[in-house]
Image (cartoon, rainbow, N blue to C red; front, side, top):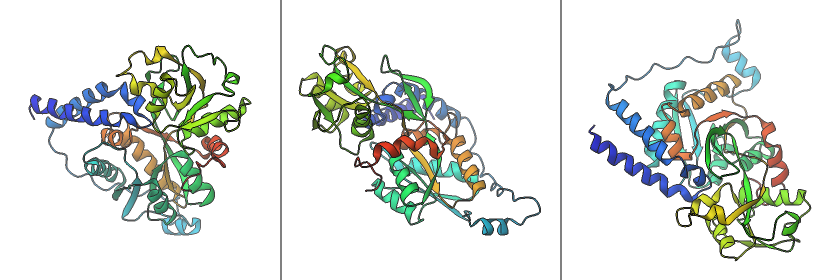
Length: 359
């Protein structure tokens, strides 16, 4: 492959990445597009210099307990053991021209690790993913944290497997760091010269919300205001302004006194308004919100849970076979082990807020 063609492909990929700046994780992607393109160049160069690898042999099945037949062990535990196929469902982020191509790369990488066929379904709506897990039409899914809570608590259909990783945002600067974390925050922003200097001073003011189901644009900020003595419904005049970038603009244009957005949505308009960080300030940082969750059907065999988790962590990590497909499809930079305890605040904050998964 010539250097000219490499540069053309890299430019197209960079263009695709720019299209996704309007999504929740867009602010974090903003600071790392150049690094991703450079890594892509290195990956393509390496691929062009190596012969095409032969198909790897199927991986061995997880070992059974010594002196105990595997089939009897599974039967006694009433656990599910994948036989020929593993089905993974999720909603891919917008802006990718051929998401099916990237999904195939991810499936191929997982197949090589697991020794069985992996079928990935790119759903149009998250409700379709929920339905697939409920009806056992999928063994794996990638969902927002509130949907995991719904599947686990109300349907007993899923267990947590992994949490997605992304770059931590620096509070002081709003810039992405190089530290990978399994959570993100919401913020309430006001104008830099606003007389609102404390949360208590918000009382009687106007605030821009996203929809009531938005964790960063309503649920987390509203609940944390309650904890500090502000009733978001009685003490504030809420105005629904869809789009985190539009909510920040509404603050700048004096349409509202404050806006609840993801950290740091101000980067979405920094290209048009370079001094947006100087003209605004953060009044409130929320507690961490868990990132997207990889869930597995609740009756999955424990040995297979560990094996699937290890495979996903391996292929999605920097340098892994499917690092870039995972990033392009989901904006995830890898995964770490998840436990149900990580979702206690999700349960508390989404109860009765309209953010209850699949409702």
